[in-house]
Length: 415
Image 1 (tube, rainbow, N blue to C red):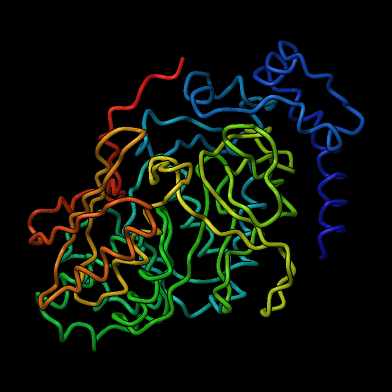
Image 2 (tube, one colour):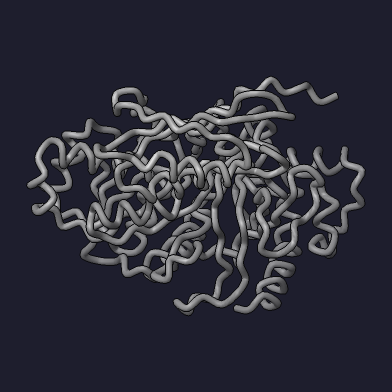
């Protein structure tokens, strides 16, 4: 599909699904209290006038107020992971399951996942939708799964040897830490594994980390992007030039967080998502707080869907000298030196008018090219950067989503 055909499909689907969205008590109240003039016949043309939906609203409302379905039409209740705050709870239906399987099957089959594959899922069990979605998407393409759940490094490493695992689904930072554990414990285990792909999800992945993981593990790494409120949204293809976005099921707006207006094509902004099927818990202009870039140009892989680049969340960035700098930008520079480890922490000091940075990095041994990295990082931040080499034990390696940037500046409160 080209851009015009995608837009026409989205317009038609939104027109069909809009009454379903408005039939929820949550959105009936939200739209009635809004000053926007809602066009129920063609909401697509005036979408930008409708109010955003925010995470705190989902957290503070009952899931049954956010669905037009009765208990008889539901199949499950799921929650977000809660890694960034109180979990929010969502309803789930058979229709949602069909959409999940359609979207995930298309993306996974495109990179050769199917019958004969065995996926290891060392993920949190329980109510989080992410675990269920990943489990279901593998089954949808005919792959088998080993739902190991959270486990010590020893158990994960042994599972990769005991079972005929071909796919490991984990976060980028956990893939790095697992490899370090294996080589430091028993490097011979690597030759006993049948792993051929690593699917990275749940956290941002810099290009440098993906390249490093592919070199270390000797397998292809594919980046996947999804949110708890919807499920899988995008995934990389063999070209590895952005993640193909499911634009036929989700309408994405890229919005400037300050002006609340759309950004020009190809520029980064916050992803705002509207579901385009009769979702049990529909979303209208959901403010994800995820910074993304969308590319509508054709991909060499032949899959005619726009490509998304996930930059990170606001918590993964800092605004400095009128520019937003993401932890992934820093990581791309640091991991270009093979002697720099996988862990780091950026701290921004000073004030809004005069700032400087310290970056604590892990060393893998040898002489890190400190002066060269400091020069490149200073260009990135456009201020003074001091690089500090620290032993590996100085870093907390328990968090699945480690905080990489801390803003310690004394900033004036905005009135």
